[in-house]
Amino acid sequence: MDNYINDYKMSLEHPETFWLKRSKHIAWFEEPSQGLTKEENGLYRWFKGGKMNTSFLCLDYHVQTGRGNQKALIYDSPVTGKKASYTFRELLIEVEKMAGALKSLGLQKGDTAIIYMPMIPQAAIAMLACARLGVIHSVVFGGFAAHELAIRIDDAQPKVLLTASGGIEPSRKISYQPIITHALEEASHKIEHILLYKRPEFSEAISDSRFQDWESLVEQAEPVGYEILDATDPLYILYTSGTTGQPKGIVRDNGGHAVALKYSMKAVYDVDPGDVYWAASDVGWVVGHSYIVYGPLIHGCTSIMFEGKPIKTPDPGTFWRILSEYDVKTFFTAPTAFRAIKKEDPEGIYKNKYPTPKLKYLFLAGERCDVATLQWAEGVLNVPVIDHWWQTESGWAMLTNPAGYELMPIKQGSAGKAVPGFDLRILGEDGTELGPGEEGAVVLKYPLPPSCLPTLWKNDERFISSYLSKFPGFYLAGDGGYKDEDGYVFITGRIDDVINVAGHRLSTAEMEEVVASHEAVAECAVIGVNDQLKGQLPVGFVVLKEGVGKSEDQLQGELVQMVRDTVGAIACFKRVAKVDRLPKTRSGKILRKTMRAIADGKTYKMPSTIEEPLVLDEIKDIMLKGNIGTPIA
Ligand code: COA
Ligand code: AMP
Image (cartoon, rainbow, N blue to C red; front, side, top):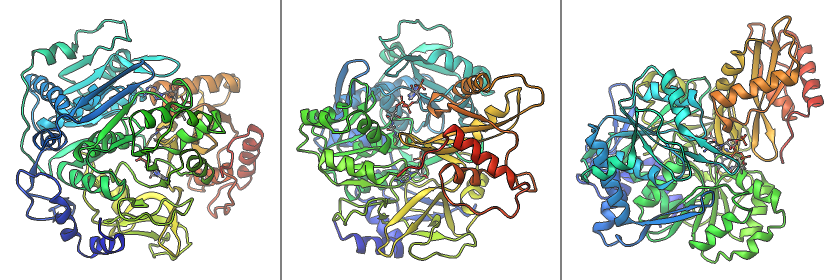
């Protein structure tokens, strides 16, 4: 690789030259003649004019260039006791047939499909089959409940929903049919086809004639080739939590995505074609899209699809077993996973059973990584542990210690330096750029590099108002942080109402909507508070209507169940505190930020606009008594 400093400088000074050079590393059917194009609406697209197909890059290209017999995907499922693998050639055959099945249903380029699947190979096959046809997929994480699925169905307007019998958690099986049936009742959009992949672990038959058997359809289908797509055709939509109850549909273009991921596999993760790469995440999250499916396959790596948890499937040695058994070179997961392992096996004894001589790096992302966890991981694995920062919106790392160049000294607590392409600044409230050590809003100069969202699905206006309006000329990441004098960035947390629970991005506004809909609740605030295991956990503060005779426990039980049924168990909403009043500004705005600061034990300024300062003392008292919020190292 070239030198990081030179490349970084070049990427900011001559972005088009920099990225057109990198674009040559993927196989285009027609190379793009230009890098960035400004559209009439003032937004930008990368590689207009380029013709390509992401599924071709992931599969056909490797078969054609001699990698057909190499393993492309390894499935390891401690929750079912199953293991399987697919070579690039075998995966291509599966994807061709699956694409044929979708085509037989009338799906074509530009249609949308929702994929609501557990971590089984069919999820990746479905994604790649959609990509083959130019059908825009939207994967919905299997831990989301019916309402979340319904919102996404209404926004994405899919022609088909691809699903399976259910997901398997260490303690229970979750059948998807009732969840989908409920979501279909709630959604206004009517889906034409629902394909259900039957898992042998689930005995129930298909209960509803709207569900069609996946395997029978695939068996009858003719394999199909790939469509020639424009670089600017969307590959997928992935919904992510914003600051309202309505998730944002992040759009990912085919061309920029492929170019950035190909570059990142070497520059960020230092892997070469043929290496084994493992991202322990879920295809429902952006990490799963970029680094379980697309990135490793585009680069010709072997990727691992793991259906299990870091602990209890069956023990805290599972991750080490996988690293050892499959000779993983670069491993990527969320800090929470390590906190969970450390809690169960503080001395890292399970690691002794599994030598990992091939492992070169551990990358962490998804949430802030506390130094204690990073040091523990380093001690157990004996490799550099690299914290790196990114978002669904970018699709790849914006801050890292780029291992493919030359590893820079690791500063614990920092997510590294800006990745080539990202002009990252820290701005104060008034938009002035802050100096070293000064904490402010993390922003990126607009236009953004390839792979970053060109817009929100069918909603340019929301894209502009959410990301581009606060500081003109800059993309607002939604995180706070500061840079040190060497350019290392420290991310300090979200500056909005998005929270991070076990590396999962969730909106407190969505939870508030559910809590507020309870008949006994007059008003409420849901905030994220620090948690030793999951980073953050949501806590609800509720003011009850006059004359409600429910005990706090009873009310908590009902509200917890409502959030589980509506948002999903993944929200981990388990605590509710009854309060007499909520702290508000004179104009009636709830002071959530101040409540968060109190819970996290941070100093805060008494807001000048506060209506009744004493309410803050009441809230503080309730938090103290209820043991709400534990400062994290
Ligand atoms: N489908 C259905 N339910 C799901 C689910 C899925 N795909 N994933 C999680 N859930 C449920 C769990 O069963 C649990 O339900 P419960 O409240 O009835 O027990 C709830 O959602 C919370 O799940 P989880 O966060 O996985 O908590 P846990 O206590 O079971 O496990 C950890 C704790 C730390 C092991 C787990 O959070 C973990 O593996 N974290 C790492 C996450 C990660 O890799 N993120 C990557 C993003 S880059
Ligand atoms: P998601 O879009 O689900 O990937 O979540 C993105 C958010 O997770 C970011 O905006 C951050 O708040 C948080 N995040 C991701 N990586 C890191 C990191 N390395 N350090 C701190 N926060 C992170």
